[in-house]
Length: 124
Image (cartoon, rainbow, N blue to C red; front, side, top):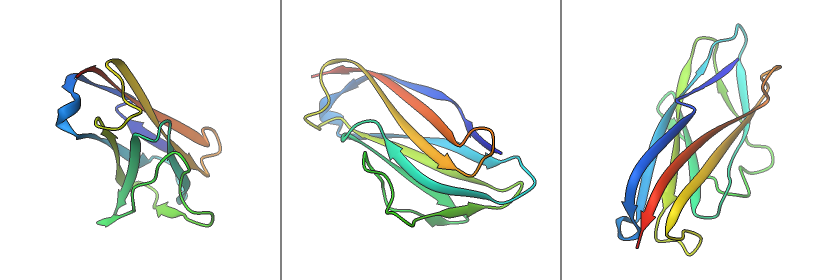
């Protein structure tokens, strides 16, 4: 059972000149069997996400997601971190309200897809 906390985060006001900003979400396996994470992807080319489990950090995955046969395991009761990074200098980031998501796909029988959301008010 995959738990991702918090479900969302608001960066508040940010400036495009800040470049990259990121938020770490806590990921935990509340189930009794190993949790296999099969894919991680983001909602926009300006966003990338990386997982860290047992000191092992994955590459940053973007809108295309992880490579075809990629997976990572979280043991029962184990946890990890999902880092969602937004590149504010990206051409895909405009002034105003910014909402971006990261999606985690796993073998969780109830919620095979879990999403987290970040928001910001972007100024030039």
